[in-house]
Length: 394
Image (cartoon, rainbow, N blue to C red; front, top):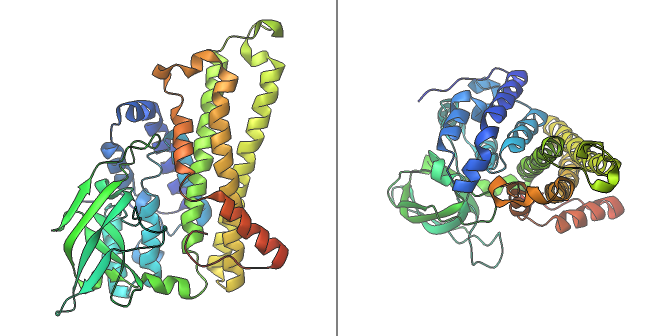
């Protein structure tokens, strides 16, 4: 397997724009028919986009957070499901960077530069809460491990070459085991049945005493023992997906009103696009989208600044900036995707048009973690100077 190697941020954004334009025309059909985007993901791999955060010393472009967030925003304007799939890939590339040995980094960076994809097996249904991880990593006499458990909402696993699995070892601390998707004991069920993001294949991964060599295990618990950007980067990409869904919904509404909507008879105008009440509403929606995009860029710049000089203070500022962007983008995505019908009129509600996919994607994705807790942490930080917790979701 070979993939193109992207040289720099400018090339990465050019490639992302081109792929977004390529993926956009069939997004509705993929959603309606639940046609899994295997070919599109192969295009992502071949393009080199999935390797853009590999450090320059290992042959990658090592793009900044501003560029990475914009890549995700662009992809999400085209397809809110497809953009979600590589989110975990980049999160777990970041784990390799932070906690891997030089040997581990070299091996996995070579894999990623070749176009191989990382999925995820992180969440577990039916436990007390999201951080109650019960999958076990058991050490064997020869120093290797076996991995046993069940993971749910495993976005990307069905399409992955490697599945990073979050598990607890005998010391009850968190580790990530990188497991080949075709390893003995791994079963992936395509049982995702969400109302939105229908083609993410966020199904169930079963792990039955899966053998794991010691050099495929990373001490993830160390990530949270000092200032870190693990959560900020992961949440930045989620915010970018929401911002992209909002932008895509607004563009769809603009096109519909310009080409299909009829003017309300009381307006006195020949076209819906001339109606001053619709113009006002589009202005309001555009302001929301622009505000989300601006906060996303500000948050990405805060992440880059913290990466350049990582301290408790810079990490906290980055987390808070990302939280503000995520809260705003989440609300904007839901609001704009719903307003699409308000401004477009009755015909836009026809099931055959599938315009509701934008709202379904927004509503589903924004359930990932509650924004009300982000608002709490922002308030505590502003009012009392309380730094956000290091739990990976901020």
